[in-house]
Amino acid sequence: MAKSDNLILKDGSGSIGKILTITRRKSGNIQVGKHRGASSVPSTEEQLKVQSKFKQSIIYGRAAMADPNLKALYAAAVKGDQSAYNVAVRDAFKAPEITKINTELYDGQVGSTITVRAVDDFKVASVKVSIYSAGGDVIEQGDAVLEANGLDWLYTATVANGAVAGGKVRAVAKDLPANETVMEVQL
Image 1 (cartoon, one colour):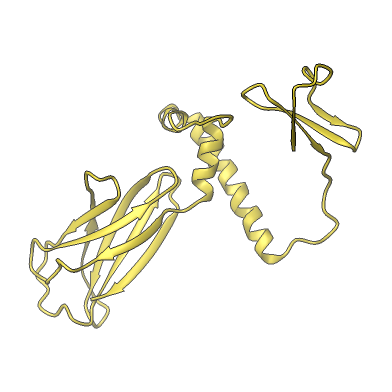
Image 2 (cartoon, rainbow, N blue to C red):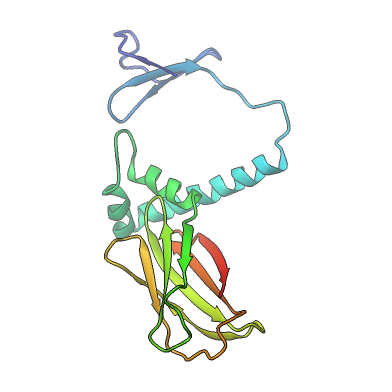
């Protein structure tokens, strides 16, 4: 879309026939673009998934704006022409990402640690760590604690594990809209 400071369009917004669409941004800028209609091509399976995710994100965005605490959190992250609602919808659309699980300091002893690096476009709300035996049984699980760097989550073992080899560690990161991301590593 093109930006316009045209005096004729300065108080206008909406569509002109099926030719142009005029949009006024929060900053006061006016954008003029070609009018878009519905597509005549049926949506693909992938497009339908994205549309469904977007609908869910809109529902979350509305609910977040009805909660004064969430609205204040999202409002603090607003940049440029965004609104708190835009930030909430984007947060709901995008799940957190686990980039690394570091098990170098985990030796099966009580007090040994596992570090999970989890990031999100807004905020990772929690990280849960589970430790499994080679046979697939849960040895222990619990919540990791956010480190001072704001990126890493530290889990401290509370149960002795005599057979570390062949086991696995599973981390589940959640953001405020409850999107989950799961990552597993072998021990």
